[in-house]
Image (spheres, rainbow, N blue to C red):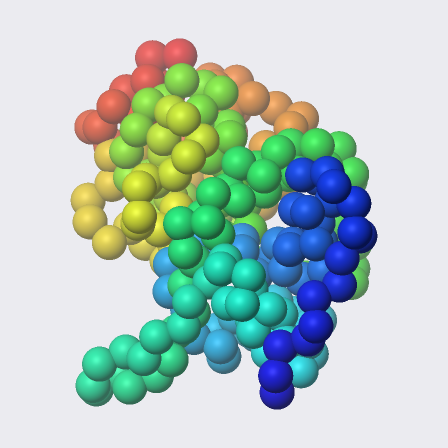
Length: 219
């Protein structure tokens, strides 16, 4: 399948040009998934419930054409193709965080038809950690929805060229470990409670000896 001809608003405006590149349905959610690092097509499809295989393939081709992603083959024994963000694609992290903050109040209660993945709470928790002044470090999150880890930062620009977050337990001893239930996780995602308040009220249990853990416990 060849990439589609680019559709354009044909407006000399940076916002319009941005929407030319990322305004299609699913594009920014693909970016959200690839902020976890290189991913196979099958993994992307599994974590984007509702997208058809044709649409996903088309969006990935468009994103590669527009310089947002690249595709490479893993060495043996993997020998699978993975997609990953370019520096230009990674620069959309603050855009996604701003969209998430703007839309937090739109979440409401989870609907019966709503899919959920634990790592979808990573970006809201990154914002919450930053607002709490937790500093930088590797943070593991254990919730009813599942475990994931993230790399807290103070700038909102992410940890250089590495992943912003990932599924499952932290790949090394975390600087902080947060344990919380699904209700608290959702409340943090909706912006209904600050992370420091949730820690103080016992809704989030914090362990670890790193700077983020100490900052949250001392708050």
